[in-house]
Amino acid sequence: MIDGNPRSATAVASADTVLVALSKDDLNRLLKEKPYVGIKMLQKIAFSMSQRLRQTTGILVDYLEKES
Image: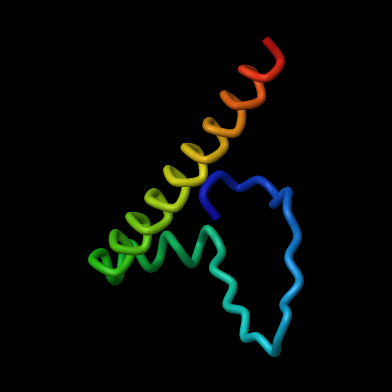
């Protein structure tokens, strides 16, 4: 949705689940028609990506310190 590349991960639901897909075109339309909603959604995505990057960086630092 963001960069147009295929996802590199898979997921398996542990219970009955409703999945909603949002394509890049859908996101662009949302941003055009409902900018406030689109911006709030992108803020949540950015926050989540930031948290995951911090976690990954921490794991990498720990690994590199153990290897030294």
